[in-house]
Image (cartoon, rainbow, N blue to C red; front, side, top):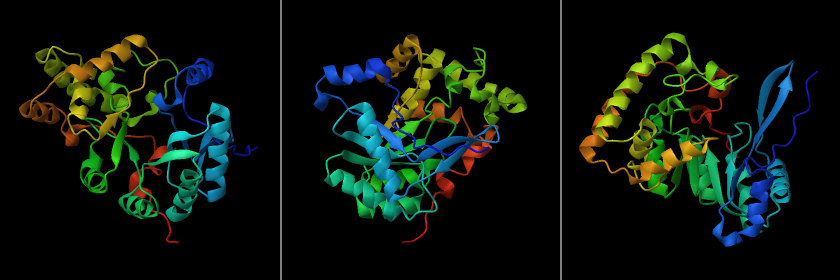
Length: 290
């Protein structure tokens, strides 16, 4: 039996300690960002997704997140994926109302197409666009990044370490048991073996710059512009410390070219995402006209 999809509440991974911290620290010093729009459920024993961007769903998710986080407002509220069955003007119209009501301060989109970004921005200014961006995923440089710079929209780069590849996952350390990476095309079989050559090149460059491979990959991203904000994820303190170290790494223009050339996109083997998620990427994120 297919389960009825439930509203996806706040996506921030605070936990009980994080929620306590929100109350102990000055609220104006804390930036809370969360998302809405992806409904997860099981269908015939398999993971399934639904994208929902109706006005009613936008408001219901926001109210649920405010209650769960126990805050009066959310600083940055993202539409996690674009609902291609709903005009973006409807989704943005409700988000604009939430801004006017003081329940959210800024609006973000994720994996939105060029047309969707333009139309959304006309309803209300978009503050941030969350997109996959790393050394081996650079497609946004052609159209998305120039448009965002024209409109003054910042880029929040998710998977900046290539879903952990530039952190050594499946290369210098084993794949975690039960990891979803095992189903990622770039981490499978022959693709992985070919991509290990890329890692070796970066590893040699990291030695040259007296840093780690993750630091080199993050430093490259940080040097693409002040409007690029990478959000590497980790569960280990040592990785957080390592990632922060990338901020101190200064690379010159010739170094950036050398790093870029070490990862030719035509040599990256395998697609960037699972088939089930690919149809939700920005390339297919146009919405009907209102």
